[in-house]
Image (cartoon, rainbow, N blue to C red; front, top):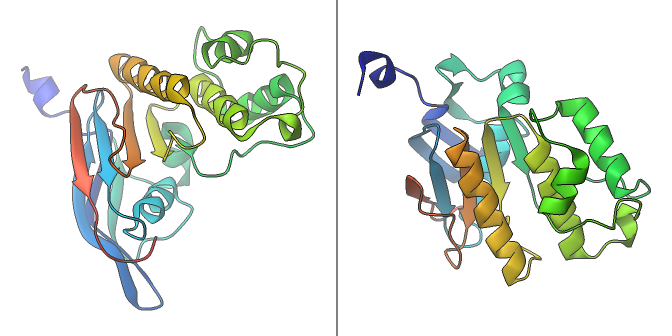
Length: 215
């Protein structure tokens, strides 16, 4: 390991991160870091605070204490918008737009990964032939696949994935694992919430186990 590599800050780091709701602790204090090329599995029972943690990291909720850093810099809105792609429980799609229209709109907001196309992303997630299908006409699994296409097109290096296997069949689960593996090999990183039934590919994977609280 060279000196430059040894002193490269992690893609994401949390120091003393805590969150409470109605004066009841949900999680924390937490200290963890995620390096480029690494997946962190955030595990815990329902109510352990997994979803809340990802929302805090994404900037959707404000932590009660602690700091979040992205590549060694304080994670302000600008840093988060460039570095983070968030896949939550809701598909974040416009119901009356078609699949291609949704992806064009989202790429217009967030940018697009170099050398990737919307048609290619739809093919990767198994939605070729659904280009003009309205989002409201898609099944829950197809909506999840369309959200995964949006994730694949994002140039953000850090993926925050909240239960990404939900509403997917076995082929869809394998798809998520292949996408995560490819993203890590390309130098990205991922935080993945899971109950433990499925896991991301074993590519520099670590675990963060939460307990108690209210998600």
